[in-house]
Image 1 (cartoon, rainbow, N blue to C red):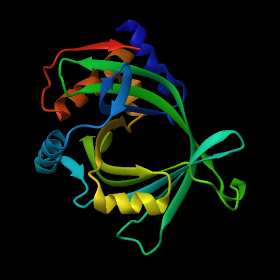
Image 2 (image 1 turned 45 degrees about the horizontal axis):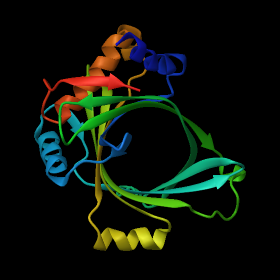
Image 3 (image 1 turned 180 degrees about the horizontal axis):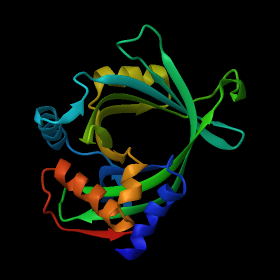
Length: 224
């Protein structure tokens, strides 16, 4: 695993970088995110019923609008927190720094582990009008695995619809089956990084994925 452990160094160099594991399946040599509804529902029910996990009881809606500006892809995320009376909006440039794939001994499941950087874009640096190339609507729940009252891992499960415009994606929400997505992210990039080596962190995020899937002893292979 030595060669694959190097992916953790991207987080050590900059703890603001995002280390995440995503559920999906390798299809025609390409990783496709998403799982079947039955597995998604089982994961949802298990997480909701597990004690000791900090969880959101209701689904949170967000809309991601992707567009190009000055030769870069930007993402504006619009969220609608139920506890607040106003819409939240944030624009970032997300850059994938490295990724590895996990080939699970399963006909329905593989993982992709990636590290990405996120650069916040100020409102004054945005064009007054943008041309969306991709719009994604998500209904998500978040779950936090704690240690000594500190959130170490975050699990997000989401129902997603996508299209090339806001109007179209909102229509799909009512007429089409969503894509079911699950991801796990390391959120404690301070103490956890200082107290564990790269091998432990990489192994741990894979074990988290297998545990979420309900098969912690499943065999797997790593590849790039």
